[in-house]
Every structure is written in structure tokens, then in C-alpha cells.
Amino acid sequence: MLNTKRLRIYPASREQMEVMKASEQDEELRKAYTEMLEGCLRNPDQWDWYATWMIERKDGTHIGDLCFKGLREDGTAEIGYGILEEYRGQGYAAEAVQAACRWAFEHAEVKSLEAETDARNFASQRVLQKCSFHPTGANGEEGPRFTLNRPNHHERLPKVSFSRYRDEDYEAVCIFLIELNQKDRTHINWNWARFEWMMEHPEFDKSAGSSIGLWWSEGKVVGAAIYDMYFGEAFCGALPEHDALYPEILDYAYRELKDDSGLGIAVHDGNKAEIEAAKTAGFVRTDQRETVMRLDLNHLISSDLPEGFTLSELDPAQEAYEFQWLLWQGFDHGENREVFEREDPIIPQSRRHLNKRLSLTALAQDGGKAAYCCVWVRPDTDYAYVEPVCTIPSCRGKGIAAALLSEALNRAKSLGAKEAYVISDLPFYEKLGFEKAQQYSFYWKEK
Image 1 (cartoon, rainbow, N blue to C red):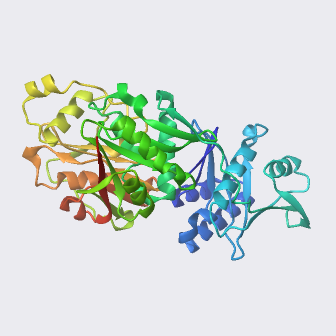
Image 2: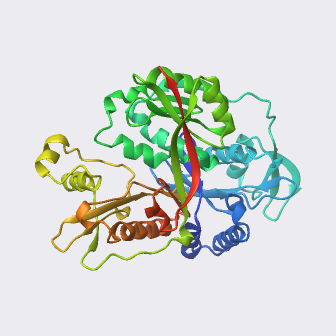
């Protein structure tokens, strides 16, 4: 996903493109959407170069789309774009095209970008000029052709600034984590859903939130140091084009996020650059590990609820007491309500981006809740993230949790998710088709 000051821009999933093709009334546009979808299906490993990219305002309003029409062998791609009539004249097209061009030139194989406009479409020509395209003097089927050559990569990156986290930065951090995982899956252990889950967890101390460090460039977060629930463990990361910030981020994390023992960070075993940076900063590898399992949702093993149980959706905000009581039992804190009510204050969790259809529980015949699972998906990501699944002790061994997760993942797939991730190495997930995909080692620096 690409993020600008006002926009979110991301490649559509197959399901989204099918809907666009089927609902489009204009014959030419319907033909174009059909060709783009066919290009995606012929070239699944180059999906982003053939797909329709959705252009949305930050409030989620869809205002247009763009595409690259494939990437040719000579390193040239042609960009096309369009903004819905009611949103034209507000600079959205230039903002979207500039972001798309930056994304394209992040790929070393891209040498130049081309575009074509109707000879009478002066507004579209002005958009290209604002984005530094130059007329070639040639005409295509639609009209004048324009080109933009690859910029000089020795040019300095835009200025980066630092700030401490504020409540209004919440969405910017989520977007940063989404972009980070789009560009580098070695950080999938820390994603937007994990951040949201943590921020709304009853044990998370929001009063310390200003200790989170953010690095900004051109209005978006490009690096972050975030403590993991409590001080003493932290996530440190930067977008690939800003990886030079990583040592600075590590230094900040150690100074600001350590506890009485020091600070630990989890680093992907294959991320040599971050491993070297951690060692240089004085972090030492330990035996502590974290495993991420992955599932191709085309290979999900289905499972049905056992007889006597029914499926229901559970809203953690509307049913805060029942939700926390279910988790209290499911994660083995006991079955004494008096202890629960005394030790676990009821705090409704807003979970801003939670899709309630993916927050599922199983009801026994007496109406009691037996298990819970939650899967997180956003329209601007292509993966689902599985929150830890739990079952109350008296209902374990019946296949209830497997059935809930199977249903939630099928629903996630229908929303465009292609794969799912969970931080675990339990055999439970293997039975549904998950495989161990990534290994992280913890590096510690003592106080």
C-alpha cells in the first residue's frame, strides 16, 4: 500500500477486480478491467504491475484508480489513472501518480514510465507535467505520449524527522506497519493487527505511549521503536529505503524502552543487516525464539463444529464482560468468577479496525461461550493475522477452536486475504494446514 498526505493507494485483490468488472456500466472501462484481471491471472508473480490500484481518501472513500499495464522487458511500464468526476480538481490525481511513480522506481529493473492522454484532456496533461513527465512528440491511440525516466538514485532521500507517539498517530503507525510488511515479510511478526491488539489490551499501559518513537518523512512514518506490551521488549523497524535509520532506532529503543534487566528485540534469522546492526549496538543473541507459521488459504483444511455447539459473533466492545471472562478461562487463569472480577477490571476494547464477522465464539447448548478466535484483515493488505485462539478447559479436545478458526479464515479469504500468519509453533495450527515459515531470535542488551 502507498500512503500520501491524503490518500491510500493499493492493488486490488482478485475479488475486488471481479466486482469492478461486473458492476462497471461503461463498456470501455469494463473491457479495461477485464484485460487487467486477465493480465494478473497470467502473471500472478507480477500482480501489482497488472492490477487495478484503488485510490482512497484516508476516510476510506474510493475516489478513483490507476494501473501500470504490466512491466515490459526493457524496463518500461505505462501508467494509467482516473479520478471520479466529483473528486476532480482537488489535486488527487497528481498526488496518486507521484506516489505510484515513487513506488515503481523503487524497483531496480524499472528504467522509465510512460503515459498517454487524450489530446483534449488538458487536465490530465497538467497532472503528468506536475509529476515531471515530458512529452515525447509521439501520439498513441488515445493521444500524446509522455515519459518519465528513472531519477538519479544518488539524490538524497527526503528529510527525516523524529517525534514521540501521540494518540493521533495511531493510524499512521498502522499504515507504516502495513507498508513495511508489503515490502519485507521478515517483519510479519510485527504487523498492524498486533499493534492494534496490543494497544487495546487491558494490560497495556497507554500512559507510557509517548515513549514510542516515530521517524517521519514526507508526512508518513518510515521507522518506529515500539515497546511490546511492557518495557523490556521492543519492535524496531524501518522501511527498506530508510534502513540506514535502523541503528538510530535501536539506540533510541534501548535508551527509552528498556526495563531493569535491559532490552530484548526479535530479529528474523535471515535478516543479516538487522542482525549485524543489533550486534554492533551491543545486543547479544539468546536461546529465546519466536516462530511464525503461514497458511496458503487455498490449502485451508476445513473443520466443522461438533454437535451441540453453534457459531456466533462476539463484539469485544459491546460484550466486554463476557469477552474477558471467556479469555480468562481460555488462557487458564481459573474458573472462579469472584477472582476474575476482582483481578481483571472490565475494560471495553474498541479495536478500531476489527471486522466483527471475523471475531467468533462457539455457544454451548446452555448458551455459555466455549471458545474464541479472532482473525484480522484489512482491504489494503493481502494477508490475515490470527490472534491467539482459546477454549475453556471443560470444552477442549472437541475440535471447537479448529472449527471457529476454519470459518474465520474462510471469511478472511472471501475478503481478499491470500495467506494467513500466526505467531506460534503449536501442532493445533498444523492440523489446519499451517506450516512453520519464519524463525526469529531474540537479541538482548543488558542494562
